[in-house]
Image 1 (cartoon, one colour):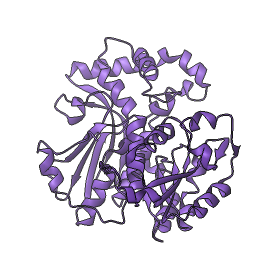
Image 2 (cartoon, helix red, strand yellow):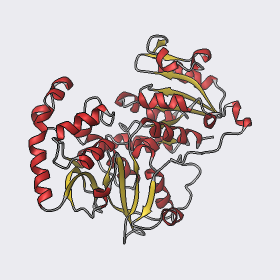
Image 3 (tube, one colour):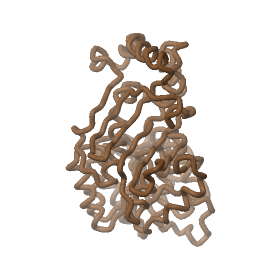
Image 4 (tube, helix red, strand yellow):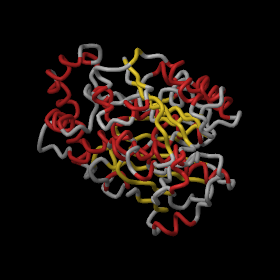
Length: 385
């Protein structure tokens, strides 16, 4: 993992050394690099994978590497079909085959495959963005299944869902959530380590979206924002409908997840979210929106010009203060601000705590990409072995 972990301007090693190792019961974002020993080939971990999109597809490739030797895939599903037959699951073309072959979706059959595996750890991996699947996480945990997920809909949704999740994990099952924030950057594990040794989060600020990071790192007024947005979509940095990124809702979910891990009981309605999508473009079809992207340009060009006149730049920031006030939106920052020095799709998380209070602890690195997100999922699964 190429994340940069630093306390203000301190060296990476110094910042890392200040954080003790996490308790064994908490799944962390650290991915083992050594090949599993031959004895692990008996598959101490059985998994079912929900979702075979770009992240799920990347995870299937990782499951065919030596790092995953201790893992046995016993079921896989997309939104319409699933497969639990061993011969089919072993196929390198499993993802493509599932588009036209397989049984109808049935969670009960997938759970039965896990139960029949005889594995010491039975894991459900949710690589989807489905709210309905996320709503089942607490139930699965309560029944003794471990859950590893990139799906933010439960932990970053209503406060009641978060509380149900905490109650369910109290029964002993683990919730691997590294991939929900920062595409696997060690944000949540770092926060858990700090809290485990008595530190407390005071404030949080950062750029939590790889797509919005890229857009505003590139946006200098020389080209319309709409042209950059089309390029970001072509490069695969945005969702197929870029409003998912521009609305700020995804960033707000990540902010909620971090804040709740830090002990702030914040409801989803308590985050002030600034959407970059004009009101007139919010309810139309995706095709119509893409045809009208130029309607974004005027307002953003004016804000950029105002910031530039003061020698500043625009960044889409998430902020949490000591009183639990949370906000997500476009902010004008000075060139010396940490967020003004980001590159590409970098995410940045600046945590000010009771001990990191002179300068924040900064976690920075690529915050988008199916391969690194899939690696975060794999790391959480391996931590259960």
